[in-house]
Picture (cartoon, rainbow, N blue to C red):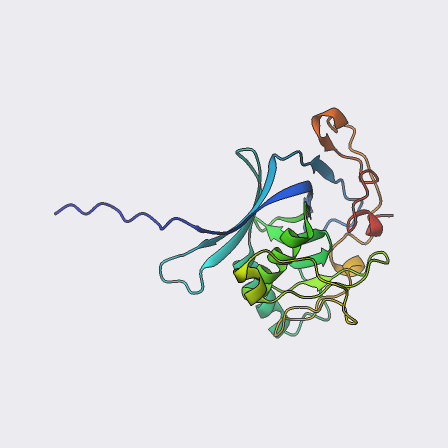
Length: 236
């Protein structure tokens, strides 16, 4: 008797958030030179989507962060997989000797991610949220899936309060007043070294790609433009 192949279940959408900006760069694993960043400004057409994918035989479900411009997929990273690998790395005893290849750095209103891709390169990207509520909602999801993250100390912005799961589930997450303590890393997750040593290349400096598209298209390669909160602070 014929049995049609079982289709994987549709992903569950955890968040769909408009983004003000998307910045990205890809380098070889051993790259120590300048980083050439590409910047895409949002005009209502860039969306960050967080999805939960149930995989038969695997628990928990895999949570992906994806970035789209209209229908074009700009970014896709498996947060669950890389979080699990980061935990294994911390237990290996090498965390104090070797830079982790996966890192998530947050600073209102931005989130930056560094992760290995295809086993041959390092991918770095940053998203800028359109609202504080969207930023806090994303941090709640990261906490719930035990994805390690660390707050950048860039600039003099006041620290932010960690939102609770109940706040996020019951409705919009309102902007919170600054508490006396900075945003902590996720409990039970390994500590993350400083952004300067971990997220960016040690010899990075602002660069402009001569092949950059015109600013009129909404895309720019100049790392010194548009005031990128996390990126340029450690590229100068």
